[in-house]
Image 1: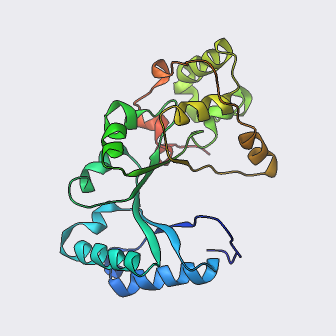
Image 2: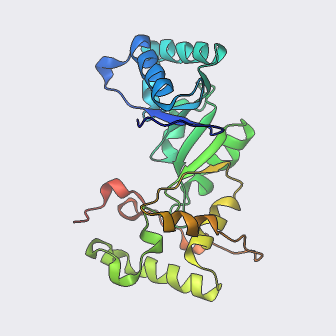
Image 3: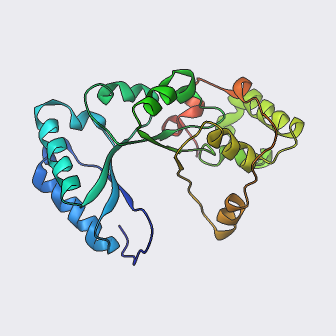
Length: 230
């Protein structure tokens, strides 16, 4: 965690630890380290990468400890960062989670089609999404796309055709898709300042765009950890 002097920014940090290190003392140490490094008094949210670590006897103790940290003002919200909507089942009926962060984009529409988007809203769980550009793949020029994605050439062709047909640039298309589903926050990654400028120049579409035909359930495309890209 870099040392920054942060003002008027909601700070969210993720926590990762090995099974042997799951303890209240270790979690407290990580929270205090984040507060010190970021020079803030309160973390807006603390997200766990593995929701399973909050289940079971040891997990319940950790969660109880986190709720205490909320009461004393060190953190405002407790959340989980997921790789797949299927993982929501792990905690949905067991823990009062405040925030869920998970992937959502024009190819990966599982959060919507599995009905989880509506269920999370009904529980007033804050929804943060990442991978809206699918690690940049949705914005790449054809000549820049790695050979690994040749087997998904048809998906990418349909995406390009769809954007041209609807006369919308790809950044706007990706962001409109997510925002039209009433997502609370979007997490984006940037390599250069110009990338941020392009994202910030986003334009809300006045058209009622239909993204349903772009969906793909093949994990080898929608789950970047499975990509075999050199």
